[in-house]
Image (tube, rainbow, N blue to C red):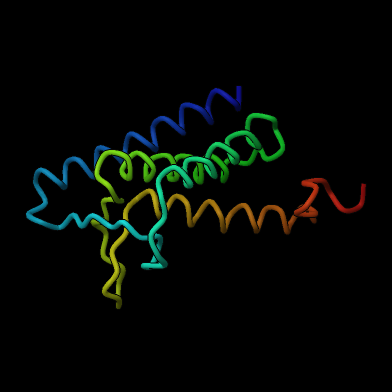
Amino acid sequence: MKSKFYWFSFVLLVGIDQVSKWWLGQNGDGVVVINSSLAGGLGEVQAGVLLGVWVGLLGLYIKKKVTSPFMVLILAGGLSNIIDRFVWGGVQDWLPLPMTDLTNNLADWMIGIGILGLVVEMWGKKVHFRKFKPINQ
């Protein structure tokens, strides 16, 4: 049952992010910026490379190596940004970050919250990151 909920959540989150970008692109009076670099302008990367990383993470999830709801956030945000890269040549950013000149989008927030949550969750379970198994077993 949990798996069906996760997949439903995944599709819903990708849809919400894509609809928000589409709607703002139509009605946002220029607030959408196409960003071809990584988060925070860390350099450009090919969409195919990101797709490869995403497929690897999806494989971990499907093989039940990492079954956290936080992985669902990472996968949904990642796919939505990959869709943007293939369709628009970059990610559609529209959310201004307070006290900076940077913008991002809902998918970026999903990825960030997902990574933070996954790290905290693994820390709490004392997971050894290389083997994805509890240290004491």
